[in-house]
Image (cartoon, rainbow, N blue to C red):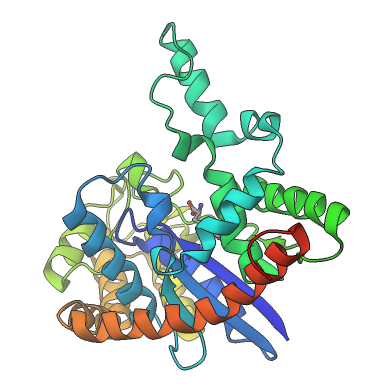
Length: 332
Ligand code: TRP
């Protein structure tokens, strides 16, 4: 049995890039044979930036509803809130006692912040750095090691954090014996979902298309995709068309072949956009309906998250007990 653990920070609602580049691949990994999968909402990680309780709550439900709407099966996968599993924070302290400070100095997010301060000529290079941001990789290591995860699907920017988890686990194992499983990261190579301007789709670039737009807004957004001024009858190259790139992600092979021919025979950009809209809307509308249905039923979501955290805690407390015992902590 292999354990696959995915953590998602409740900081933004998903866009196409998240869905195609992260959610779908993680779901397909979790559906493999002999796989035990867990998805948790990393709300304590989000606390480094989100200080509005209403947003925190709503985004947390939003992440849960998103993954369920996209096909996560709560009967098979464990789904829980990080903040409902306090063993995480006990483990985080333990880990911090084995983490060289220098390791945190080298963590990307912290280094980026220091560099930004430097570039802005700030005297205090740690300006705007909370201990939460600084020790973020330790908390993430706790999430992972607490459940003896074998594989952690992550974006490229999170690889270093999984490596940090391995480093810390190794140190503890060297001291007390093999208590912690060393996790592996899994990334989706070569899958780069472009945004409306052709760069990688990202909310920070403002080039993203939200996953659960209603049909009207979705159509409007698709119609805004920039195209050249070639007339409809001119043959078009599907290999250099953002519309076609998106189409490929949502359409069946047959539909893709069909649109390819229409491109080669000459197609008006308006028509191509309409074809894209139809295929996307058909694919996403059942998920969108499910998402809003779930968001309107917070009791159900609460119940699910509570059940998930009860199960998660059972497992987590065993690991923490083992560590406490090995370290001579607490009553035994
Ligand atoms: N840091 C991750 C991100 O920003 C979220 C996260 C927190 C996570 N804990 C995790 C991911 C544990 C995987 C495993 O995307």
